[in-house]
Length: 389
Image 1 (spheres, rainbow, N blue to C red):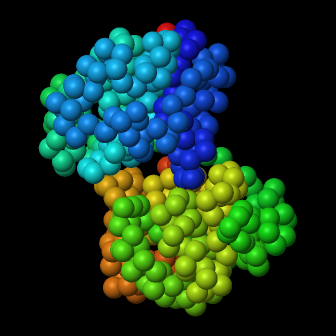
Image 2 (cartoon, rainbow, N blue to C red):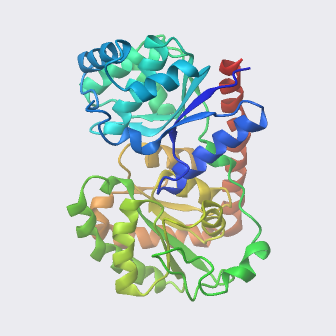
Image 3 (spheres, one colour):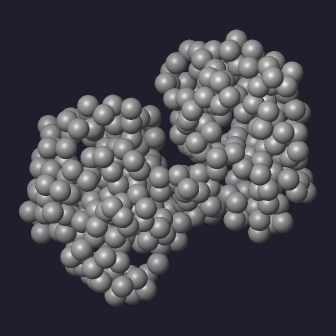
């Protein structure tokens, strides 16, 4: 069994609930098997140039960088880590998509590990959008050389299979399905204390978990588009007020920096409490899992909510992922365009009402689906440890 594992990106301190959950899960489960992640490449390494090395725009760029690393003229620190490890485990998440530096850096690291330093490399928990030809060209060259590729939903697998016919990969559900929300009686009494869920700079006061409530987040579709995020604020303010008119408490949710930029403005205008970035993820999971309905365009909060049976009203995301999630859970449900929230408020509120009125029958069905996905996540870990052996 491999004893020295290089784990990347290390997202345990990332300002995103889903990233933190995944980083903690992989390290914890591997350590339990005596296969510890002894080295880590921090998440921030993937966001900015390293030692003057820019993210490769094309396959030719990647080959040029790899030659510099091989010759000892670039990325010396990560090269040392790659030489010293037995296995490289890369958490793919939603990073490989057009216009994202992080995905290209992930592919560069995967190529260095597998082709330059000859180390078994596993790319797991992966979503991909291969619409950009140059990015698809890099994927087609890098992924077939890895020890294992694991996608977390069918559309990414189909895109990869179309790009590289006969390519070997496996599909496993996202590790987020392993979340285990606590019973309301275990956390509800504490939640009634003002400030229990407050994590600077975001404040939760006046929230009663025993009274009906809904949770509302924004969408990853606003990533990289500050103007669209700011323009969406009035629509989210109006949506919050309309949801309150249903007789529900509205609890705003900012599970990442982009959502926080929107939801802090909404909180200021509506006076509604906000579950913020610095909240412990397990607390956020408890709240999402016990709401009447969760509204948003974030993959992991949607999964976390479903583990407790909370139905979703989905907004689109920066890839196909929310549409894929709803296809898995409620295939006939709409996915609303996040850039046109103001135009869709009537439809969103109507869908939320239908989900709430469906009651325990829908909740039980969703919990059963979540449990079925969770049972299959063990296959992901089995595949990773098989590579480690």
